[in-house]
Length: 378
Image 1: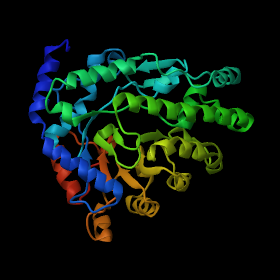
Image 2 (image 1 turned 90 degrees about the vertical axis):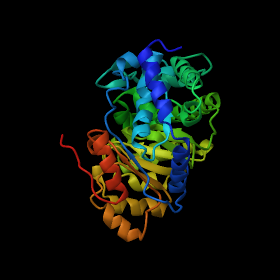
Image 3 (image 1 turned 120 degrees about the horizontal axis):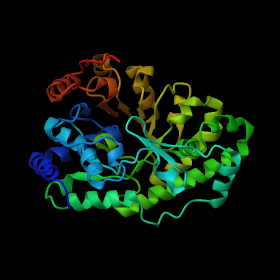
């Protein structure tokens, strides 16, 4: 099954490192955080560069190479096996953001630096034709199917890995992100020039999001209302992930009309899920937190927010906060809550990533004792 002996050796080592009981405790801890229940310690997932002994590949070689995609995707689990933080072992077919747009025939650009991005159809006529064709047939076999099957077949050869590594569905984005990927940047002016067409496109992308999520979950045998996700996370209240990266470019008024209702509709069949966005979304954050089904929130650029203030808003909304920003005020939060704050999971990503395993071990201890961690310079 595996073409390279180095990959087999790496998997054998990962199998030997697996602590099934520890991972079961991590899953219960994450579920408690989602539910707003008491936690035994602050859940933390600490990122650090993949150690050199684990084989990984740039994005373009993994595009059609099942084995390279699988090994690169499993690197996060290997890091967790070494560190023993609070992550679960999760892996997904990594095709970037274009999995659903490609089912519509929207062409993709693939590079190591930018990963995958849809080219966008550009014209109103092309978008109208796409809308008229409706939701694509999801039954024909794709590379995503092959990647899922490859992962499950390889993992099935290992007693412990087959139990603890969860294959979750490929990136689905969200209704407005999907519409923006299909149309291109012209959708931002189309919101004003062709609002009816944008609504029709969003209606289609919402139905496609729901249909694709149903299809993938059914194929993977994953429950509709829960599941697993990137970064080693459990989806404990709601079964899907929704991205609103393009939404931060819109006003609060546009968000209220064109984005919020479609997000709620997309989340409804799955009892909700988590919402992610990059950029500065402070002008629409209240609407995000008020959207029915948004049970957790994650910021790609958390330094636009203050931990204490955002945590308070999330708790008031009954929303779990996946925090990947500064911990300079973590001690204040501990004092304010009078114990381990629940409804909070710390992810150290991007500029808060540790330099190596040794630093990650120290950072994990700092997080659990509510001390700040270093922010890397640009």
